[in-house]
Image (cartoon, rainbow, N blue to C red; front, side, top):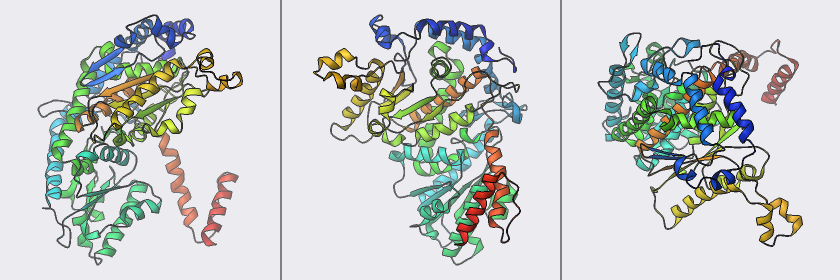
Length: 546
């Protein structure tokens, strides 16, 4: 196992991979498939209802062997075991990393400082179920005696991206008599538009903030409170019937006017980007009901157990993570395109952006040594087929190598004529086109004029994975999210970085707190920033007045 100060590039398996890359870098996927008639059948994994075809990556059997050697040499198994044991693997914050405990079944034992946290998890879960059932059944009434018909989740980062993604992903299973809105941006437009057509008497706000001090969230929360009171005659008692909190700060929650009996707890061993299956998922449970929410948790847990126990050669998250290492560090790809061919997953790429880039955007090892290899590729994407008519041009014929993850489902939730067959035909066609391209000779054979031939050539040799799943259900969504969670873990373990802190978001936040009073000051403030920032502040202050 690597130590905290060992760089990945110092590993024997890494050096073997470097030598191997020099041998295979010029080999085209056309050749790899032509030389191995069974490649498309062999380089696949089929587990938990997820079928992963990774044959269209620029790899050989030797590549996989060496990547697996690298996983062994870097102690990936030991690191997985350490996470599941509750060891404090988030070194910079001295915290355990136990999102896996959020979906552990009753009776499981996961220890933090010698205490089993699973009973705590299930106590909060039971409380969420009870509250959700009361709201959905109409037993919970607002201040004026009307039932709740609108739920507005106010959070930011993991307190927003997870709930938004899950609501959109599982909208098919949602209670259509309830309206759900999500507010994250401190831009006043976000809250104004979210509440524009709502009746305060029928609206419940969920304020999601661990400390109940997050600047953007609490600014939005106080404005939401003002909106509610303005609509309900100004009685402060109304707040307790229209606001609940997902937080750990009972004092601040009570100070705001929320009954602490309606405060749902989570813990410092849950990072924001790993929290959608905690109390942060209250809006999800309200939307889809407790049974569906519990089915989603079961999907998470199934993937957790698969990741924990399956040999790496048969381990979905491990293979996905190792392929990302290969593409990033050897093929020098800088991004990963997430391309779900499922409209309900339209927010999944945005969700993965935080999960992957907040986790892997690190430039030093666990021991603080500067890495000499790339970490954290940029994740981005849009649902198919929309993306095909925008950025796929660059993926096919641009100068940058962009590995793609295609995600598709065998059965649609909304069958409509030939729509789904057309959709899936595009998945398979795009992956095929990226891999094999189209040569100049093939273009000429179609009667294309010589001058036009270069423009119609597709080089191919562009790597992709295809994930094929039977149907999008709460359970499969849980599996899919956990798949990427653990893929990110795999990457971070090999890169020897702390995947669970996010110090990079702090500097800008601190500077903003300094600048805000300078923008609000009634008198001209004395500015001590750089000349650009000073000039921008002065220009904004003038724009405010004129």
